[in-house]
Image 1 (cartoon, rainbow, N blue to C red):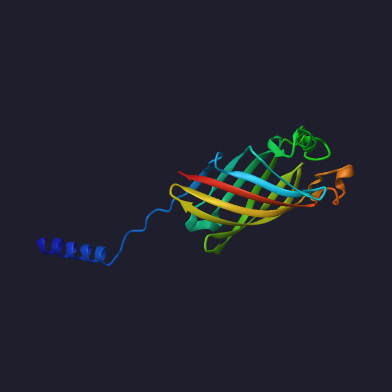
Image 2: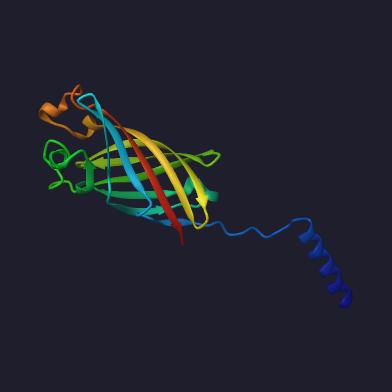
Amino acid sequence: MKKFFTGFAVFSTTLFLCGFTLPAQATEFHSIDVAKSKITFTTKLMGSNLNGGFSRFSGKVDFNPEQAEKAKANLVIEIASFNAGGDDLQEEARGKDWFNTKSFPSANFVSDSVKNLGNNRLEIAGKLTIKGKAMPLTMSASYQVQGKQIVFDSSFQLLRLDYGLGAGNWADTSAVANEVPVKVHLVLNSN
């Protein structure tokens, strides 16, 4: 019996010295750190750049860097938190010609699939719903683990007229560009 324990000790020590370790359980990330996250956009209004964003959003994300293809996301954006330009512009954006926040208080993105592109890069496909209109959306994203948090940076181009954003005179794309580049900076906490 003593010979068995001596042999086992030598075997264990050899494995340890050779760098063999049991695989660590991968960290999973779920809760959104809203204070550190942001959704921003840039558009052209009367030929000038207009920068803005949405300050209130929530949702559920399930992400494990070792199983990126299994990631799921469901983000809800409170449209009334729209901020760009002055008070008059923000009031106009909440009205019927634009977001119509009384009838449609939130926008929603739900992921359908995630493709791992390697080097901490992803292609995320899903549906974005604004004003009750669900449209397919594919965005590129990169991520970086920072301690007990993971930081995602993604971008996509929204075509505002596809969602009925900007009716009447606002439908004129020479006044307001149809293409709206959107950036999402999302910080998630580990379990």
